Length: 183
Image 1 (cartoon, rainbow, N blue to C red):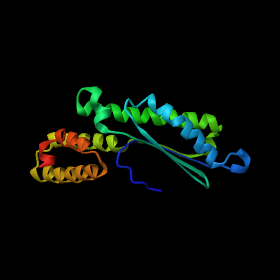
Image 2 (image 1 turned 90 degrees about the vertical axis):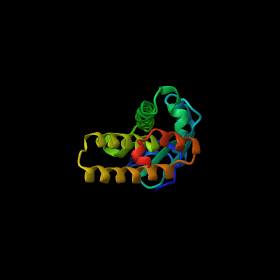
Image 3 (image 1 turned 90 degrees about the horizontal axis):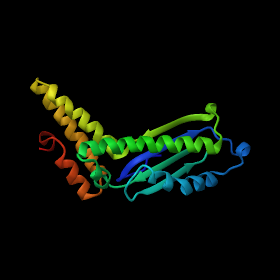
Image 4 (image 1 turned 180 degrees about the vertical axis):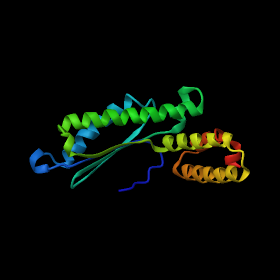
């Protein structure tokens, strides 16, 4: 189940082997628990207005908790754009760790029923990977290798920009990416 998330700054994914008859809870009850608590949990990690979307899928239980916000607001208090992105990624990981722990405790989930959980880092994670990859340009002396990497980075930048629906966030990203990638 892939959703379009143009302002996603974090997502927690949980997939467990869940027998509704044994647990006697419906996915609606689980969704209500997550909706009731996720906003408060997110306030501990994200210092900006956010939107939470909860999706719960039947069968073996699959849950997505998506946090949407603005990159500009997320990096504003951290000095540089790059360090702000690093902190947003750290906050996304910490939020997901907390949600996963709380969910497993609440549902009394035994280890053998956990199929998968993920800490997805949203747009800040994509930006962080772009920056780390662009750092490799400093060590490339071969012009062909350098040009190839610049083209890859331009492609990745275009994909990230397509995900961002806020013009201020787009402009902020473009101001902080190497000129040779933007050009």
